[in-house]
Structures are given as structure tokens and as C-alpha cells.
Image (cartoon, rainbow, N blue to C red; front, top):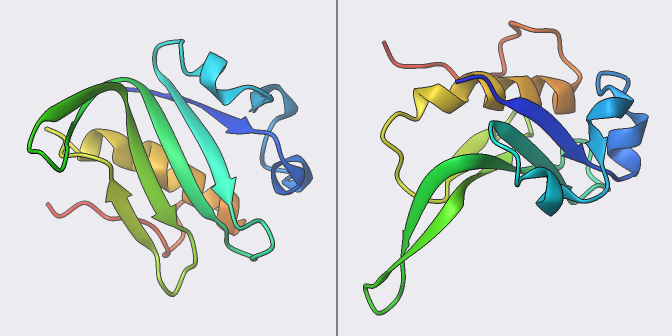
Length: 127
């Protein structure tokens, strides 16, 4: 599935020449009400490679609570440490096909790291 990437506004996003100004939004929650949107929120902007959370709209996400009950969310969240030396990706819940999200995740990582498409610091699927 193809997701349209939208970026929550902040100084680092505004300074990034790879992000089109039409893809920068002030209200990420309102944007996520649309289908097939991947909303990106950056954390720790002082760092060269900030942490990122990607919110995939329209993807069922089930979380187990402490009392073993489940909570349903209409959004899947992916947390990323974008530093090339410690690149990690964590899904907020289990997903049936994580490879469906790899292309979008790689695109976000490449934009944050300022690298060209196809560079070495990216997720690879185990085939």
C-alpha cells in the first residue's frame, strides 16, 4: 500500500530541503483522519539524527494492556532511532505484513539522514 507522508511542523522539518512545504502540517491528528497517510513526528530535534514516530492511518493496531485486555487503535505507530550507527525500528503492535511499511519507513529515514535513495543505511527485507 502506498502512504502519503506528511510531516508535523517544526524547525528541523522546515529546514529540510527534501520535504515539500505542501507535506508539512500543523495538526497531525487532523491529517491522520484521512486514509493512507503516514504522519511523521520528530523528537529530540537538537540531535543531528532525531528520533521519529510514524503514524500509519487506517491500520488496525491492537495493544495488550497490563490487565491482559486489548485496546484497539485505528493507527499503527512505528518508532525509529534514525542514527546510522544505531538504526532501530519498533512497531507499536504486531502486524501481519511489516514489509508493507518498509518502503515508507526507508523514505522517512533517507529524508531525515539526508541521504540519496538506495543508500546503505536503510532497512532490508529478509528474502
